[in-house]
Amino acid sequence: MSEAEQLLAHEISNMCEPTIARHCKVPLAQCQYDALSSFIFNVGPGAFANSTLLKLLNLGDYHGAADQFLRWNKGGGRVLAGLVRRRAEERAMFISGIQPVNDQAFLVVGEKGESVVKLQTSLNLHGESIQIDGIFGPHTEDAVKRFQAKSGLVSDGIVGPRTWEKLEEKS
Image (tube, rainbow, N blue to C red):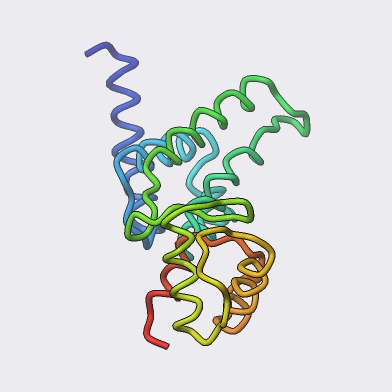
């Protein structure tokens, strides 16, 4: 192992690993751990500990956290091409570890198929009265927004992990 590789391994084990262990409260896939290590190595433990990325991650919002990588693209107040590229790579690495809850996909208006049938059925079990046709149209979107608002979620009409979790709870 070269001297540079030894120094990098030392920094990761003495700075990145303890920072992740201390601050991350959610399970991480190895690729997410690696992306966070790269990020922390670059911005420092203090910046990471106070970041919106960490706050969203600890709320279980893996996609929101992933999007935060892209905001850290400045040096000296200027957007730097190298940081834009680095953050895009860290984000891609982080996102590759995100698994949908119970293998359910994100659903938005325009989607069709069995996942939408499951969504519509679940919404009806939670008090909605929508047609179960497998098409995520405006009526399904309105029902999703009502359900999200009633469940204390962001009422955006997008069915992601938190909405699926709430739908799977007993009504």
